[in-house]
Amino acid sequence: MRNIFKQSHKYRILSIDGGGVKGIFTAYALMKLEEDYGVHILDHFDMVIGTSTGALISAALIKGISAKEIYQNYFDKNLFGQRKKISEQIKGNLFPQYDSGLLEEQLRVYFGDMTLKNLYDSKKDKVDFAFCTSNFTKGEPLIFTSPEFKNVSFTETTATVFEALRASCAAPTYFEPMLFKKTGHYLLDGGLWANNPSMAGLNLVVGSTEVKYKQIEILSFGQTYNEIEFNLKSPAQLIKNPLKNQLWTLAKSAFSMNQDVQTLTAASILEERYFRYVPEEPQDDTKVDEFSTKFVNYTKMYWRKNKDALLEFISSGINTKYNNDKKV
Image (cartoon, rainbow, N blue to C red):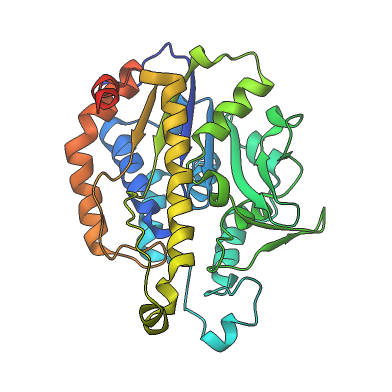
């Protein structure tokens, strides 16, 4: 069985987007890499950074949980649980549709009271990490990280893994914000500013180490294809379907632009040293909080169609698709 990872490589970052249960898209690819080629993914990366479901996958990999188990957990455990009644949603902060109890229970099962330093020390060959969150109280980004980044602005290294992951998954309207007891601030999902955390990882490394941009390669996994048509609706339409009014569409559009800007900026800096593995077609009726067999089938088809380009990047550090994508 050939080793698909080149032996001599630059500083490699594994970046994993948020996306709720759609994280199965990334988990499947990681599982296939580990099973088909006999590798442990994080043995070949210097850093892993994740947001929301990407943070969950990242932390699990660092702890030594196989990609196969991570993938299987998307089938076995929908961490959103049962949707609350409307009367219960309006009583919570930012109208959470779900109770966070199931999510918190599973975080305790896997990580207990482990601190970020404990997580860092748990892997013999140290891997730096970062989990993106948002400080809702201060209107600032906040990144929970391994010790390497302790002197960087907007980072926190002394929390528990539970706190970091619970905060990173606190998506507005899905879960309530998390109160970070150390500061008394409320924290939300990092997807508000870095659903694709590639640039956050790039800035952490360049801003706090001797590593330069030209020494960095990023393998970036996403879960969502962004294609939004913004249509203004008439008053009659708004009354008929208020949940799909202009403000809701505007929020989705802003989220989409945020993600695309992160992708384009990272690609413009790293050029062929940046590879993005992400759905390339709209997936109708695929939601972040509901399991979709159709999306799983697309995930498997996408792997078959794109694995050669992914393997080429992994083995060479060069995105052979870059020059073609640049012309589009």
